[in-house]
Amino acid sequence: MTYNVLDDPLKLGGRVFHSRLIVGTGKYSTFPLMKTALEKSGAEIVTVAVRRVNLNDRSKESLLDYIDTKRHMILPNTAGCYSAEDAIRIAALGREAGLSEWIKLEVIGDEKTLFPDTEALLAATRVLVKDGFVVLPYTNDDPIVARKLEDAGAVAIMPLGAPIGSGLGIQNPANLRIIIEKASVPVIVDAGVGTASDAAIAMELGSDAVLMNTGIAGAADPVAMAEAMKLAVEAGRLAFKAGRIAKKLYASASSPVQGISR
Image 1 (cartoon, rainbow, N blue to C red):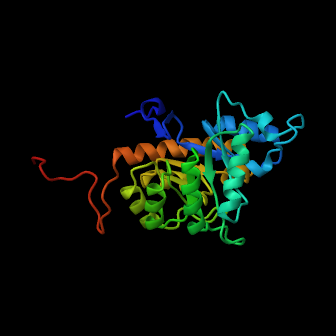
Image 2: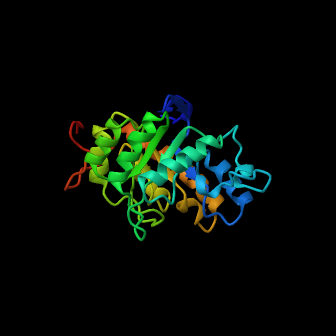
Image 3: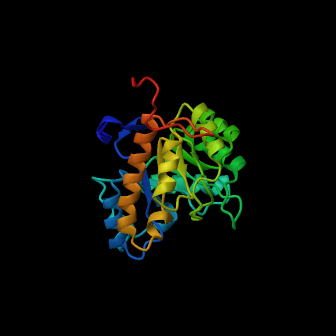
């Protein structure tokens, strides 16, 4: 079975994408390096923090100058917001500046761990959905919160695999599996991916996509890691669709003798 991304599209917010890897644009040492890594990742969706974009003077150099919008859809995010009101305001600024009506919604509740404030996140989701935004909320791995966000109109649920930028990988696969099983919208693992195997595990659990930034931008060779993540997401998706063998306590011979005539 040869995996072809064209035959397995990601349907998200009424649009179709052929890459299941979503990448961020922060933490790169230079904009040209970021551009090359984005291209190597094959990602069709890239996130941009509204706060990092100079919305008042577009004549100055900006990271937007290094994003090929023919290849990548810009997904603005509300990174750095600590209240529902602030996140709503930043989302509105991004839309008014022409970035997008799509928004990766982040409302942070703790400065050290960067865990989301789920109460404020839910409140902001409800307001933004009513205001016509396509909302993709970054949340914790709580299945109840995930269900409430979906009920509030989120087009996807984006639970963390581990704290933002930690590189710890998938820390709570059981909860992610429950969220995936119960959700009727795409589930995108967001945050905590440190290397290719983490991305593959997220996809093998049944995630529809993986979003990452630090795992690529913080690597010794971001361009090589971008390609590794692309391949890992594809491999994990194919493995999920193929169906893994059941785990057993004892050995099972690879070449059984039952049924062989002597």
